[in-house]
Length: 144
Image (cartoon, rainbow, N blue to C red; front, side, top):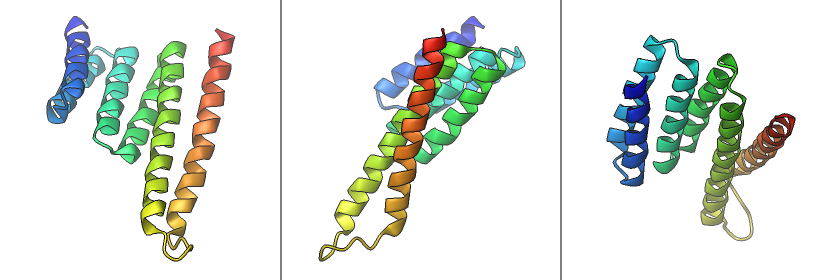
């Protein structure tokens, strides 16, 4: 277990240094160790760090997918604090996705008309999901 925990610390250092390939490798190795130990909380933390890697790489769709996996793993491991942390991460990632859609819309504006309806849909969906997950995280934290 200690090796997996050390790998997650190493992954965070790699993220800070923008060494994303190394961070992913450390997360994957930690995930493998925790999976072998059937340690759901450790697996969830490895997935959370992997979501951070994707956020740092400006890959919000991948970050959302991995964060959802982390949330499920937290629930399976009955880790309420981890689930709350992951829900806030999901809210933040949805807000990041909203910002990307706004930037895309700003770049696409022509003659007062926005031709990119897909970006509007993504923006609305992302804002709705961010609000929903933040409210749920707050409610879950209030129950603690």
